Length: 264
Image 1: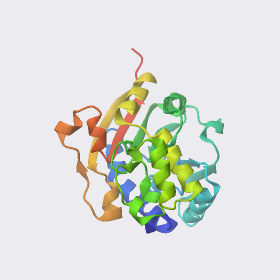
Image 2 (image 1 turned 180 degrees about the vertical axis):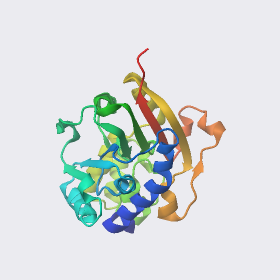
Image 3 (image 1 turned 90 degrees about the vertical axis):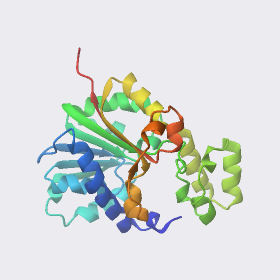
C-alpha cells in the first residue's frame, strides 16, 4: 500500500488541491458556481473535495457509508470559517429522503466504479438534481492499467502491477492470496472487480436514464497524478479516444458533466 492511502491528512489535502485545480474549472466551463448553491458529494469520504466549493460560498452536503471517514471530515472542517455551511452525513444515500430537487451540483469523484447497479443509481439520482442542476463524474474505466484499484494492495509488487486485475476472477483471487493479501483486502478488490465500469457502459446508463452529456474529457494521465506523482495531466489522443472499447485501456480518468434531458 502506498503511504498516501494510510495518511488521511495527506489524502484530504490531495483531494482539495486536485478538485480546486481541475474539477472546479471543468464544471465552471459549463455552469457558473455561485455562492449559496447547493452542492452534494456522494461517497465523500473525509470530504476534502468539498472544500473548494465551501470556500466559494456554496452550501455543501457530503454523504458516505464510512462513519470513521465522516468523523475525520467533521474534525477537518471544525475550524473552517464557513463550517456552518457544510453537513456531513454517514448513511446509505438511498436513505436520505429530503434531497429531491435540491442540488445545483452533484458530484462523484472516483465513486461510481464502486456502486452496484449503476444504471438504477443514475435513475434515482435524477430526482435529487435541481431543474437546471448538473452532475459531475470522474472515474477510471475498469480496463485501464490500475482500474482494479490494485494500488491499495499491501504487497509492494502487486500495488505497482498494471492490468493483472483483468485476469479471470479465480486467477485474480489466487494471485492476491499467493502474494499475502488479507481476506478483507481480497474481498474489497473482488467487489471492485464486480462493480468496475467502462466508459461505454457509463454513457449507455446515462442515455437509459435520460441524461445528456454537457462536457467530457478523457485523460491519458489522470489529473490526480499531478499531486500524487508529479505527472502533468494529459488528454487522451483523439484517435485512440475515438475507438470504442480500446480507449478504456488507455484512459486513466474520464471526466463527465451531465444533466437531465430537456423535455421535447
